[in-house]
Image (tube, rainbow, N blue to C red; front, side, top):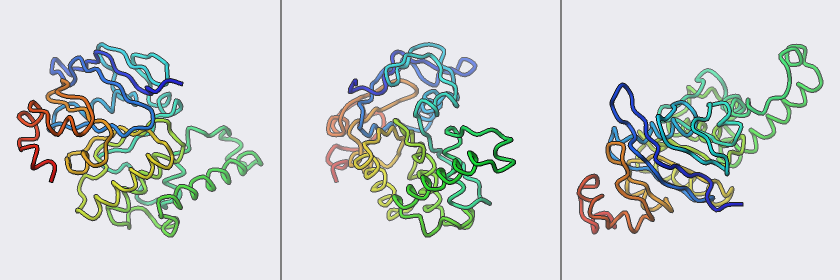
Length: 261
């Protein structure tokens, strides 16, 4: 098995002549946390949308788990083991925490609509297995006490944990996180960052995340890719990025000493 789980080569994406991603190449090693940073409009979310099949790049190639493709459809991406959470929670507010997490297992469903409607044995067995798996993930993220609570009644930080639970319940090989700490206070950020670190360490889960809090990025990530208006500005371990003069000048706008604080 290759150490590289994901490799992009010369990937470009444009919308009506406006370049979102320009000749981007980088690789993600299996089991690492790779952070994508850069100003708003740098192409970070567009890149995640390419990786889980929402957008189709005009050029370039992507290799995931040894399979080369130009575009992967969203359903195929999920079935191949790419999980995703979104910047704005995409949860069903009127549904319980448990049922929201079970939605993340929909790609594993093997029963027919008739079997489910008639509550046939295979459908009941699948439902029981899905509930058992979802509860295991809720226990992992310390959410089991809220299993029956409607998601819309929960604090924002807890909702973000529920979305994380739904993203990992199907045991993806690669997890894409779009600003998982957005809108949180310092305590909530530290809590979610600790969960992301634990998922990476305990589940050996490869994670690609977008985050603007550079202090957390430099503490959490093994590998950082810096984007600037669709092009790659820098690519390397946090200690290299922290001291890269191009990154400091174009994005961070502060000194290496300040970043180390």
